[in-house]
Image (cartoon, rainbow, N blue to C red; front, side, top):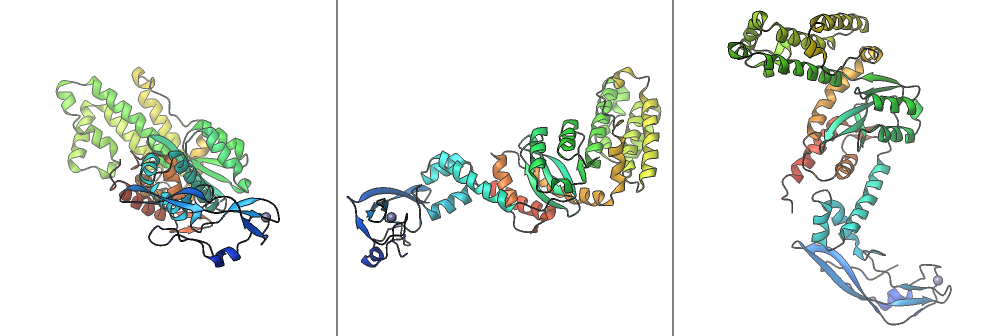
Length: 408
Ligand SMILES: [Zn+2]
């Protein structure tokens, strides 16, 4: 139906007689319609100009349908009925809400913050519907800290794709997400961190799936434990002995093969002065080395030896034994299964750059905005998810855009 429309200069064109003759009732498609009552003045909001809201007044005629007796307004092309916004303003808001807080978008466009939120909610629902990927047999729940809170990135491990980003790492959020997945019983394996409450939620939602601990999380926990030991040993030494501990913090962050000649010389001196420190460093390093093994049998044996070394090393040391117990005893199955799937190693390497990019979102204002942006990445997208490399590149671009824009 030809209707009045917005031209390029923000003016509404008046309806022509041809338009009126072809007008139909929107309720029943009846052609017999008559003018009804005075014209109604309406305020329509259009895209802002020079950072200021733009409004257009339009006189709209009201019609009465002789078929059904209902009244209706002359439709306007380019205007969202019910919201009194132009379609291009809605498109503009959908773009701007990723670049500045909702309150800033509201101020610039002259619409309420509540309406901006409701447009965003609709947009997010659309993104979610478009991100219904095929449920894989092997998923990874990848903990990632965004806006100072741990969330889970959900990945298809074999395809190295992202399939969702959960807003938190609470067992309820994880459980509800898994339960609504189509064909969720296709999931046979779940790679995750050592969060026992979440593991329980996974078992409740997917009783047939096996859980496996990711190497990055185990190494992270073990490193944290030895970092505490390093601090304790440091606190107990003073004078020249303390000076011999130079670089201990830097050394503890490195694997043995990454140490410089100078750092190796420092460690050598610890043999006579700080045997505790040396033992802690060696044990940490040996734990990391476990994940270089390729057979499950060898890893199991090596882990047994390592556990015995741990016991011997700290059995007489009261302050060290009082440290929080991080042990994976009782979860040895989850540790060993890691070695049964060579695809885990490849996945864990592939996902590192993406984790680094996501951890850069420090001051942004809403996890759901970040989430909607992530789910809308088109590059590297298939029915199996979005390739982790494409997500890393897309989110890096996004970070560069938002941090270039001054916030208001
Ligand atoms: Zn009608």
